[in-house]
Image (cartoon, rainbow, N blue to C red; front, side):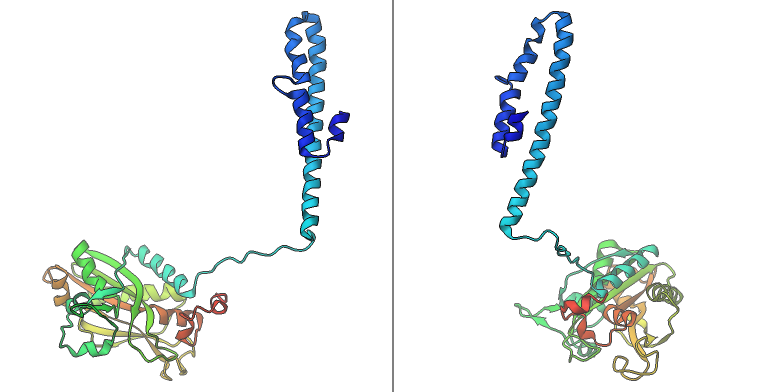
Length: 331
């Protein structure tokens, strides 16, 4: 026991432990091995004493190890000139951007309505981005979507101007009936201001089945807006032209930034264009391999970035893609 107390470091203590408990030459283990040579009465008496000694020494070695470890830590702290009484640094956790939060909420809403979540390429072919959506090369609607062309042999690749190309891709891959939404980034050659960016997010949606009508479209839109804003939102539906739907509509919502009074985001009108929508054009169904005589469907393209602005009262679209952590930490 005195040897254990005098052990000033882990090495010395290990030597003492090996001296008495070593498997081959340990003094205490040697005593325990010889118990078999004693009489039954001696075994009972000396065996009990030997086990008691073993337990006491084992406990003392354990306590001495803890004392030495504590001293080692204190010595290490002193070397580092570290004040263990000072509060530690709090690790900062990451955050979802408001754009991601709203996108995930929308996906949950649409899943509850039986929609699947799809994805598509951001660098798209001219065919899927325009021609398959009833926008041929000489169509004036192309002027409405000035975009970035990617230099290739035939100049047939573009950074997609909308998520609508996935409509045709989904029809070709999954057929009908189908319910699907497609969140993702799109790109336009835009002059930047408080409500316009050259990179923003949309959420495309399609529903194709037998006897789908405008009434189904309106019902889904109302469910969507009520789910995302957690309250009734004033909307208006007005005729709009889009080559890939017929008839086509513009769905506007009352500006939630100014409450309809007029501001820079809604261009002083009190209304903000949220999404184009309508019944899918027969030519688009044909491009997707769908029989337009049997099936009908609706499509919509939700301005996801603008929806985020309305949800959180963001008055400038450029904040969202600014990569400024001060902005993200507010949400």
